[in-house]
Image 1 (cartoon, rainbow, N blue to C red):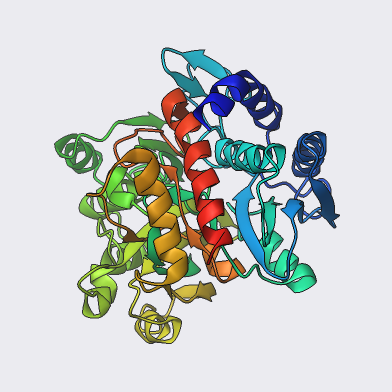
Image 2: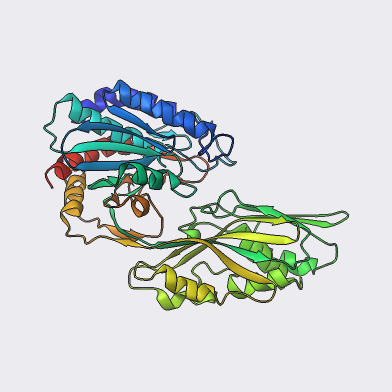
Amino acid sequence: MKKFVEENYESMVKDLGVLVSHNSVYAEDEKPFGKENRAVLLDAMKLMEDKGFKTENVDYYACYGEIGQGDKTIGIVAHLDIVPAGEGWESDPFKVTLKGDRLYGRGVSDDKGAAIASMYAMKYLKDINYPLKKKVRLILGCNEETGSQCVRYYVEKCGSPDMGFTPDGSFPGIYAEKGMIAGLLQGRKTKIISIEGGEARNIVCKKVVCVVPNDSFNLEKFKAYLDENNISYEIKKELNTTLTVNGVAAHGASPDLGVNAINYLFEGLYNADFNDAYVDFFHKYIGLCLHGEKMGFESIKDEATNTSTNIGIIYKEGDVINATVDMRFPIKASVSKCKELIDEVKDENNEFVIKGGIEPIYFAQDAPMIKAMIKAYQDVTGDFESKMKAIGGGTYAKSVGNIIAFGCGFEKDKDNIHNANESMSIENFKKQVLIYIEAIKNLNEV
């Protein structure tokens, strides 16, 4: 197997470059998810066809490549869409760039690299005519970052696999995922003239620009508050006052790893005597809290998981101000329980509007499917210490059924997912292929 990976490494990087060349962010220029997502899907199909896989385009929502035969299907579910590249890159985000022992580019670790690694794991088994008793299907979606409509559509058309994994988490695997609530903090009474910030609902906001009337707050108190918290900002005073506050981006499932510019803007204004209904509402229920503490979510945490809360995007339309909320709630809670708490988050001018909710998922760690995958990881890496975990991130496992997140990340690797200079180590790229080969072989026997 190692010889196969070494011999095919250059081809793996070349194929990865084909996928990374597409700026496959969700767009509305062509249904269902934009021209670039249609294009990257077609390129992925061509890569699989060239390897001898049977392929099918599922109405541009997803595609798949298949090997093997049998009544049951092992599903490997990866995604081809990406979050916006954003600023701060030291290389072209849409070209695979080698620096030292790492490959850089948007999507190399989330999740285009894993799609290629899975593809080559299947190619190896096909090339050696491995006796598969099940079909192995690599399902590639185009809407994971903005709702996973792609795989829900796939399941409606093609059904769920009988077992398998999504290589869009971490090793040695994820046995449980928090539930999710998507919503808006919406207000209809504010002195804010305009506001704009954030890149995506599930990314910690790293920059927000807000325009307020001159002399509507205590400028010195505002500066002092941000200075005390080591927050970068700019202030321009003309016809009105423009405030630019900078933070640090991170995945919305782990808001503690970032610095949210929106939270600090509003807390700065609140502490600077900006008497405003929306800012007061935000302070009362959010403030700088990242775990729903001010909304009562501490009451539903369990021994393994708590709630995370991220304010991703903020904007004003007419007289209405909206801030998107991405909440990940504990694995032993429920959407209905969260709704009970959220129903209390309101006043006469403002409210938390729920836009959607997804229940948590959980698998017993001694289930045959789970044991098959962790054995693959252990046999390849020799790591018997690392344990499967519960996470706040939402993966395709929630939408597909009968699968868990397994890889592609390794615990100690700093891959900058969702940030500038996203990267993947060459060693881990190769190691993924070996682990997925073993996982497919083990699942073939379940």
